[in-house]
Each structure stands twice: as structure tokens, then as C-alpha cells.
Length: 161
Image 1 (cartoon, rainbow, N blue to C red):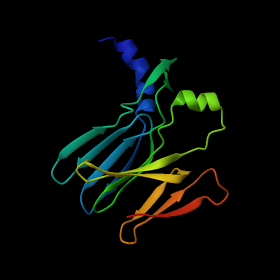
Image 2 (tube, helix red, strand yellow; image 1 turned 180 degrees about the vertical axis):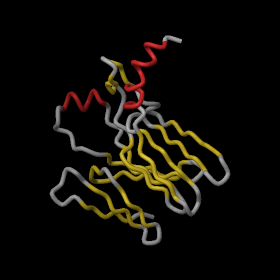
Image 3 (cartoon, one colour; image 1 turned 90 degrees about the horizontal axis):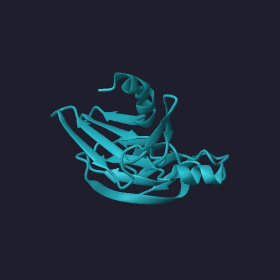
């Protein structure tokens, strides 16, 4: 093992695998999603099971430059919420080449909400009419409250189901 290369790569790996997480104490489910790429990890802390789901955009892709990770794949997830019955995730999916090419002209955020079972099975994908970052899900009222950083009125409400 090249210890020097590994030491130089650690900050880049930490950047590339930066994640968002949510935990639901009612069911013991911890969900972790990557900011780059398309990786979902689910930990059931009650029965010690662990599931990894890697979507079509794969694991975080990056190049290392002076110890820093430069993303080369896609902007991945920006929020996750574990409810009592499902996992809801905001997904961007925009390639970094496109982000660089458009140089600030693209809307910021994701327009997809992926829904998975608590065991990691895909349930559905919502395609939104706005680009969003954060979400809060109320399954009882079938409502998602979301933030849109591109809008002067940043709080949005979506109904689902």
C-alpha cells in the first residue's frame, strides 16, 4: 500500500463521499445518501442489517488535485427523510460537465424525489415542476414541504399519492 498516496487521497475521499443522513427512532432505520453519484445506504439498527443501493449514476466520481476531490460525475442527493414506512430522497442527477458548461445558468437543486421501502426496494420516483433541495414528508396528509433556492418564495408544498 502506498501510504503517501493514501494520505493525500483521504481529504478527497471525504469530499467525494460527503453524505446526508436521517434516522427514524420509531423503526431504527438510518439512511445515508451521497452528495455525488447515486448511492443509498440503509442501516437497520434494530436487526443490524445493512443494504447498499447504487443507482445508474454509480458511486461518486472524482479526480484528485493537490489532495482535493474534483467531482467528475453527477451531482447526487441533497436530502433524505426516513418516515415510518418509506425513505424519501431528493436527487439532482446533473452532470458536472453540464454544470461547468452552463456556468451558473442552470437552476440549482434536484427535480426528482425517489421513494424506497425501508429495506431499500425502489417504490416510485416523482418528477417535480421545481428544483428543490430540502424536504419534509408528512405521510398522514400525503404532503411534502420543500425548499427551492431559486425562488424568492422558497417554501413549496407538493401533494402525493
